[in-house]
Image (cartoon, rainbow, N blue to C red):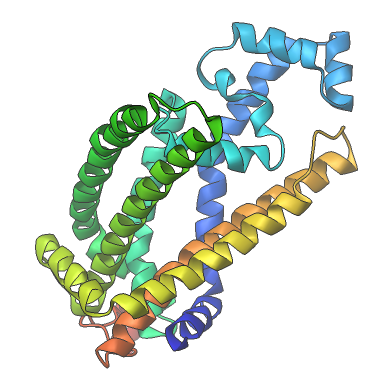
Length: 329
């Protein structure tokens, strides 16, 4: 599929966007990691349990720590080891598990930062050529307030899905369908069906908001309601192409997750094995971010190619002004 390959071409032609998003993600998570490290260090002190924990997993100490932990410390569970982290994240999303305050605050800051840079990223992918740091941040600033308004609508939609649709699917429909069942396997199939329906709704909402961002940038739309209507209209008019592109990107994401499941480190000791685990974890995060950016790049390519807008955006590139001394020379 041409837009999919074109998306990858646009993606790899802008390595600075990948590096910037990765560093922003790392810096957002770093304060949380340091805070949790200090909490663990204070609890361990110079005890023998500290040496045992450094050599591997000390479950007795871990249970003791979990029993007295609060706030960020409550997240330090066995699910933080290797691939279990990914499974726990998926489970938390699909089950609508609430986030603790420190993580919710960090996530809110990350979302705000993402709203800012996403305008510059989509603008860069839409043009298919470098726009420079000044042009990138100018585009980010131009679209930030528009994306912020769009983000408020997105937040309301996702809140409705998690607060009402999720409860209806799992607390009502699932309960009513499995109340008189005697076979546990059938109940499991019903729950999988609920997950599939809820995931499909989340994916549909994400698609609409992604294409709304693309239309805002490419066509310089100022009305977010108009952008959402235009995005829905584009998806309805091109269902097979939109769905095929989305499934291709999802397959890449599943490949990344599958590779991570094979290479994810377990509970190792200190020294080289610990640093190897850190490096592998960061590479997995980088790969996930690359796939996330590929979604935007390929969706931009599909929209432009569908309407013969390749390389075109309504907003001109902002050029950094020359110093007064240069202009007067």
